[in-house]
Image (cartoon, rainbow, N blue to C red):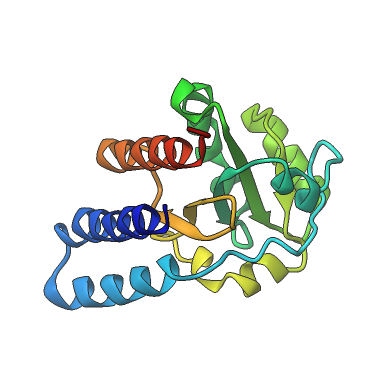
Length: 189
């Protein structure tokens, strides 16, 4: 079982590297390769609690799901500008391949009310967690980079995939494959 998990992890790392590296210059490829290698070997820190726009607790909600997609948004420059892309996630959340996955949208914003108003303006109904002091972003620094601000983590809170799947069909398929494989590995025989 452990060998299968190692092979799966190595396959995932290679797949991500190939997807990202194809479109870059050699120096960019090296930087991205090193970043991804470091990120994929890390464990996401979910110990920080943040308030949700629905009153829920981030720490409690993440404990409920085996697989989690975390999308981090740094909205310190323009709150509403940063949040506009969230409505594209609705279709992904309704995809049956992601039915057992928890979606966690985290916004770095120092104003709960401004963020709530902006979310109301774009008519986004899903819970958004507010990193009002920037602690979550600070603990998981790479999430601030738009290349790495979307991750898939497993039940052990290890990063298994990195990259924003919005508009990227290749990466969307990698997310689906990884979730299906992990579900198959964890299901009883």
